[in-house]
Image (tube, rainbow, N blue to C red):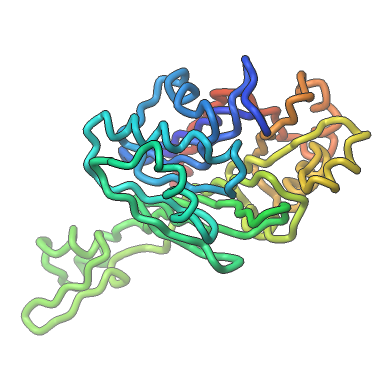
Length: 303
């Protein structure tokens, strides 16, 4: 199971009743954060989740509304006596940007590991997540992220018995080990069934529509996508500033055949996004207007 919380859904600046766009997920005792703008700490506290188990922070890009909350969050994590390493993932220049921000948070009791993205598509495996970062189309280098939790096949007891595999080796094979005993080599594929469907979430903001979004969101259980503007007359503005409209996001969701889409990263001028959703759902029926602390649990499918 993957817990998902859209901590905030605003773009450009936090508002009294709308925090900046940020996503937090929880899986197997570890938390992951995507983007950390001003006020993200308050959004986490309002949700009732905690800071210490945040093990990974991904950044889409380095505009202030996506990273300016990081120094304060690092200080809070340090004050909670954290000593475990923190992994930061983001476009090229990540360490330089974070080092500049850390002028006000110079000493931390935990190490930081930097993973800088240089290629158009890169993958990272960390804390049980298979993360695919893919470059999108904003006015600075910007990435979307797909988080996948893979699910191993079932251990096939009958096959293990038929092949005379010692019982004491079963758990090691189930955990993916290759084991040699008494001159015989036992491999996981001898007893494991085919990989089962896992969980897939795609998060994408600050971009024009781009083929990579469809490719890497395809079949996602949840697609969280920017919808900077709901109004039909904002199409030219969206193109100029390299953002998206609700309608454009809906067309991407339909083309990628995702199960559900949440819109986020609203313009400060967009007060009531729900007013535009009837037209959006004509394009993609499972579209929803995101809001602060919107939460769901993504479950593995029953066998």
